[in-house]
Image 1 (cartoon, helix red, strand yellow):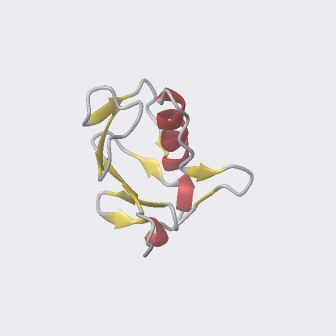
Image 2: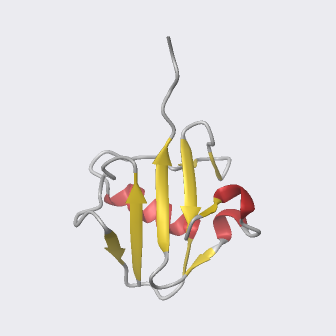
Length: 95
């Protein structure tokens, strides 16, 4: 399964810079983000451990341009071959 990745930062663990090729035929967005995190040389937590949600103050995650808040199955949304996952880091404001 090939999942394309777009981001506003260099995603750690994304070797070729534009997609992840996985052996699984079925995968949820949670499993994908955990796999991507495990591939990173310095673990990036996209999903808050213990809570099982994405912290909206840290990340915005979209599948094929649909924001996280609109997914009916949340993190259990199934990905399909060729889907695009967009990972956006939310910059901290300050003065």
